[in-house]
Length: 269
Image 1: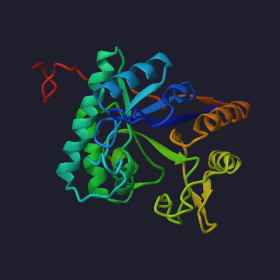
Image 2: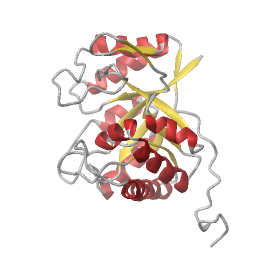
Image 3: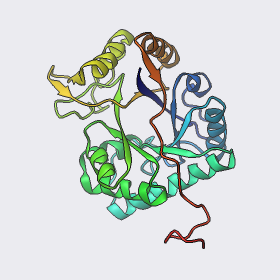
């Protein structure tokens, strides 16, 4: 039986503002990318979302972003490699603390929004992100756009990587995602989105916006939780995948050897 991971970006509420349908969506996925406070999410939301994910047996991942609450992390910012390293390490550490406090563990890291798209093509930035993840815990899985610079950087650093594809996003000829500034960036027809997923899994390629066939590898499928029918789409896609013989499960995760009380050189502090 072939397996595939279904992931969702969750925990993206902030204060009195609410985003997504986490309670209904989490039982339908195998991995959760939880916002870490820089584009969305606050300590209470992080804590509650971690506990909710654990209650459904969903793998917990950090979803670090650029520091852009007003723009929901979707605006490009000029950051140096050192700044990116610190931003990612800070956010991964914060989410990991909530996971440990709830009796769980961090399993993966997936950058959010503009940081994700910038790292897909900027090798210096992707190297910084991969280095931060590796420094925190080299057993973590790094999630990046299929075929991107981030995946290449993670593998070169010795990380296990999951190549991500999108059910409801259109692609450009170079394998990048169509920018959200375009009106046709999103696929709103559920049947078309399901067909895109099965095409990527079956054929290892996707049709770009111009009609070109773009090769890619699919380890995990992103399901956005902020669409009006996100839960219904997740339910029907999961059922269709199961009927086609796919097992829904998170990417394999190496057992962590990280000693939380160890110093930087690995010896007890």
